[in-house]
Length: 421
Image 1 (cartoon, rainbow, N blue to C red):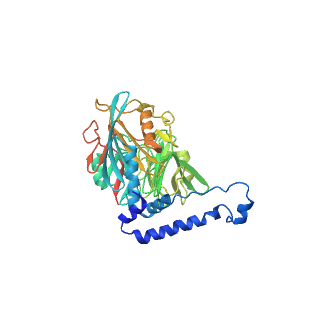
Image 2 (cartoon, rainbow, N blue to C red):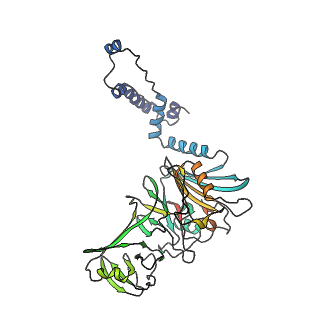
Image 3 (cartoon, rainbow, N blue to C red):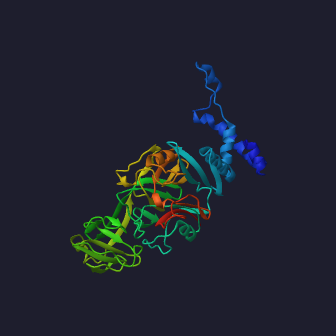
């Protein structure tokens, strides 16, 4: 459809077209200013070389203007982009700016069934993309099916999220929801940062500390299982009512409103809105008599204005190149062909969520390298692996759309959801 037809079909043609033609004409008349002073007759006589002609595609100008002002043009662009990426797939509309795609790919002659959801948040304005815990009470030690998580968050799309401790459901990796840090990084694994106007991907480190007058102590992690007895760990009420046991030669302090309200070598009640810091006694001694203490919790990179963070690992695509850093992120145990979950985004900020079925005759699964190549083929400039295997499950419009080994999917700790605002 050319631009003139577009305006006729949208019933605002006459006035707007006149305005845009005038605007285009103004651009054309202003072009000499871009190349210096206006070309005069005397200049032409003096020139020994011919003056290059300037070709203006007014159709492109009109199309660009129409796209800027027309939601319909943006929808059409999204539709065409998805159709081009998946020429032999089944594509369904979930809602404006949200597509569900089903396909079968073959690797080494074996079939792999894949479900994909593409989201243009600029079009899906009635929804928010965010991580969600399985508990409606922000309890980290909880597990629910993805259907329950989706219904509890009023979501139309959900994909299983980061790794978690099977016994308790505590997420193992960086998880931030609505600018609140729930859990910190494990082995500085890669994470996706979700901003109001886009995304970023990086390996995330903890940047946290407890400070009092003249003293500062680095906090190694927040709401994570202890890996070394020397670590300084912070726990919030999302972890549970009580802090975990103190390691040998350790001590605990409870902080509320920048004040130490209790201290002990035994587990403490975690104050609502506060922290319990568990660390070697010698590290905490300088703070025990402080009148005021402050806890700062952040990440490196700082990611100013980031709203949500969800981690995974390893990298799949980095700066538009296949990049699988399994050893660096200590994830050698998840090799081989398996069910897989992944997220990534394109240069135009379209988010891509992927669930790959595996461990069955009809779908053998993917290696991480195959998954990385697949994500790159979809145009992802950055992409990361999420928890996979038995955890891989995708929910769209009221039902689980892939085929996990356990019907409906196992109970999981957290998910990435597209929730109604």
